[in-house]
Length: 97
Image 1 (spheres, rainbow, N blue to C red):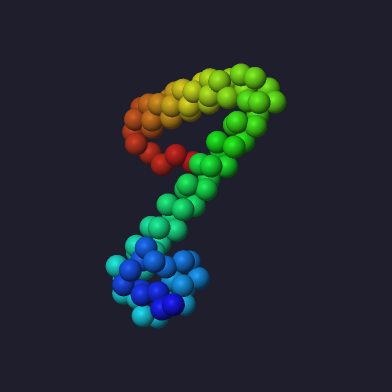
Image 2 (cartoon, rainbow, N blue to C red):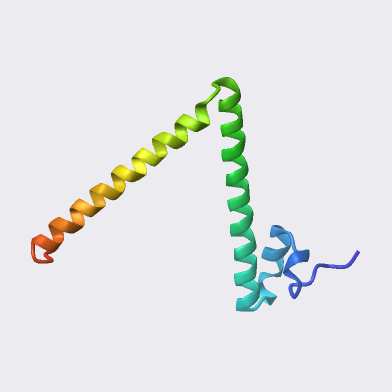
């Protein structure tokens, strides 16, 4: 079994990347960070999906109600941001405290 090559980021585990870190160039560092970021994103998506499935199983319609509430919250946030922007523009562009 040969040691993983820092030139092939797909063949490296997280531990292998850190072990080979002194031999990596910037592009390899960036690729490793991108892979770890994508892995974290995928894990978070899986966790959200599993929570949603569990809650929908325990309380039918949970996910639908959750998404409706989220949409309402986003609309409210956008309205608040618009009002703040209007106040800034009316106030002559001063610094908001």
